[in-house]
Amino acid sequence: MSESPAAAAPEVGEEAASAAPAPAEAAPAGVPPTAGFGTGAGAEAGAAVPTARRAGRGVPASPGRRSWFGIGFGTGLGAVLAWVLVQTVLRIGELLTLLLLSVFIAVSLEPVVAWLCRHGLRRGWSVTAVVAGFAGLLAGFVALVIPPVTAAATALADAVPRWRGQLHDHHSTLGRLEDRHHLIEKAQEQLGPGGAARLAGGVLGAGQLVISAVTSTVVVITVTLYVMAALPAIKRFCYRFVPGTRRERVAAVTETILARVGRFMLGNLVTSAIAGLATFVWCAAVGVPYPAALGFFVAVMDMIPVVGSTVGGVVVSLVALSVSLPVAVTTAVFYVGFRLAEDYLIMPRAMKYAVDVHPVVTVIAVLVGGSLLGVIGGLVAIPAAVALGIVLDEYLFPRTDAA
Image (cartoon, rainbow, N blue to C red):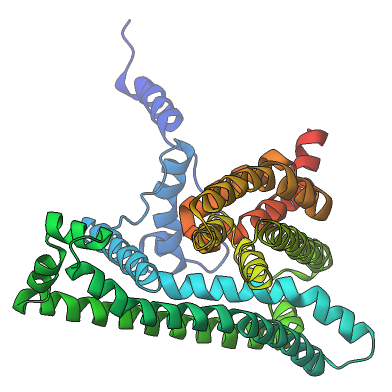
């Protein structure tokens, strides 16, 4: 006997009821049943249901996307600013080098200034005393150099007429050179219309070089004096950029570096004094004139790494040529040997005791610094190597040893 439709209806209803989602919680009393389909809180609850379902299925909400125009504009603007910064640094590179030299000189003289301050002088008077001492050394050097330079200029002025006469004498050495190479004719050609212009250009270039050297010297002296006078205030200002929890440690490391730089300057002065004394003894022994002035000159030049001692040796060898050719040759050989001994024996050992740097590191640092920044790079290379070693010992190596 077949079932009636009325009997089958409850089964269909039960399947529909089981397939339907669970009803929401009963609305509080007084809220109409249609509140979830209108505006207000019911609408927000209804809108939250699809979002919740998407979150339950792991579908993230789509974040706001930046336009390609914004990305390209930001990248282009950053590239332009970077290019402008690089060009600015290149244009003021010479000025930055002079400022670096000024800071280095001020830091190198800080131990002397600090020593005077500990003995009762105010900082301003201590800086004045140091500057006066260096001015006295410079005045002594000029007093030693002026007599030989004046004598050489006088001898040159007296020799010019004699050389002119020998050029026209066919039996003299200069006369035979004139007959063979036509020196006077070539000189007149060089002093013609085009030659005069080139000569004037050379004179103007030499004048610009002198003006540039004088300007650079004034800038270095002025900045050095300001840095020497205000170095404690400058250090306090720089320390304020460090967080307070690490400021004391950073200050201690910085003071250690500055002390090592001062000791490096002391070691450099010692090696320069050795070079000047050796020059004085050699010149006095072989009869080269003005041994004191030449010794002072070599001592000053020897403070410049890489090229200083070489320039001093060349000048002394040329002065020795006024005595005789064998004396000049032996003087040149003496300076070659002394340069090798200074670079590989005296200076590395002095720097090891002064700044506790291995001799190999000293030689490599001077070569690299001289290649990058020339004379100034060679001068600051060893202090830079010292500072790098202290920073590594303080911050990096303890972490690697503990790892």
